[in-house]
Image (cartoon, rainbow, N blue to C red):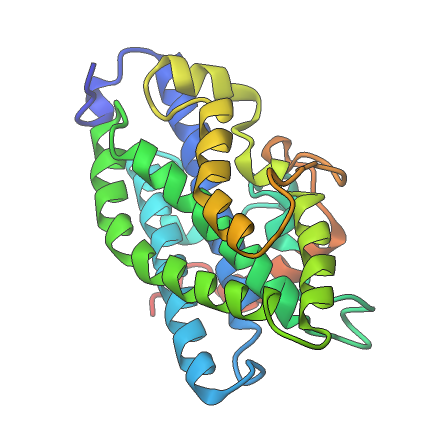
Length: 272
């Protein structure tokens, strides 16, 4: 069954599953692109500033395209979906909203490059797995979008894989800090791989593969990198702070959305 447009959707259950999936995809990319943008001017060197900014721009563009599909489904304008929804309405994984380093974010902000590398690398691998599955989605507009996004993911994956291997196999304190970052990321990574309460419906309706398949393919993609770096495999993942797919979030998301939506909220009707 291939659904080529919103008008062809067979029933409300199918539409709900599509909406739930699109919100997850959009919100994940949206919030992580923002966290990445906070590194502008703070990356290890100027070339990385340029490369990281380009990746964040791509990622925010992907979020925008998902929001546009939601707009076509009658959920409101893409701008309002990105900026006007409350934290409890967001469906991003909690890991992706977390600040870039430990400490009091407002009074003593800290930036942990090891955490940035691990979070982006593991997420990029998971995103690639999802995109590969979405290219065969029963909802054709989503499948076509996945094909477009896939062309940019190759660069993202290569970039973060290179950083990951360099740091985890380096001398000095780098491997120690990478191990600490991996522990922090893996403690919440189940939230990234989760499809939320509608996961089984998404799978049954052919929108995307099931969680277990996605997880296995994520592990297989990481296996050669872990083995080459003498890291324990498979990585053990958890979801300790709550399930973002159910609207459970942290104060970090409140802060992020306040900053992200400040300009939009001054005049939601303005055009730019």
